[in-house]
Amino acid sequence: MFSTTILIWMLIGAFAGLVTRKLIGGNPPFGTIGDVLLGMAGGAVGGILLALIGDLANFVWLVGSIVTALLGAVLVIWLASFLKHKPA
Image (cartoon, rainbow, N blue to C red; front, side):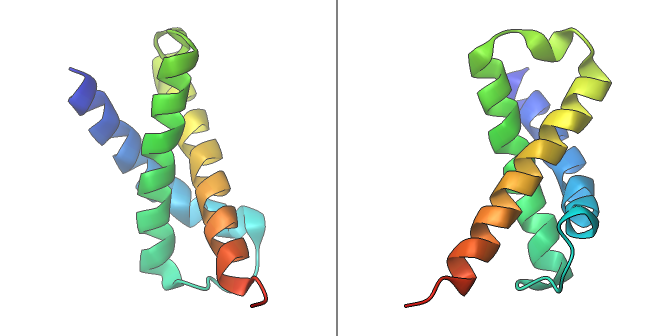
């Protein structure tokens, strides 16, 4: 059951990766496919962190999952962009 939930978070995260670029702005340093992949990772990370906090994901499952995946995607894509552009 938990693996299915992670897969759903990743699928929502793929969409969230595209939306995140619009929120952050600028040119994607990893391309659109990179944003989608990072969004998937962010969706999974956000979902797992939410699950560790408590059973809040079941409260408003779809809306909670979308918000969680979007926040996770924003965090992961912003962090990846920051690390890629960090001066040596």
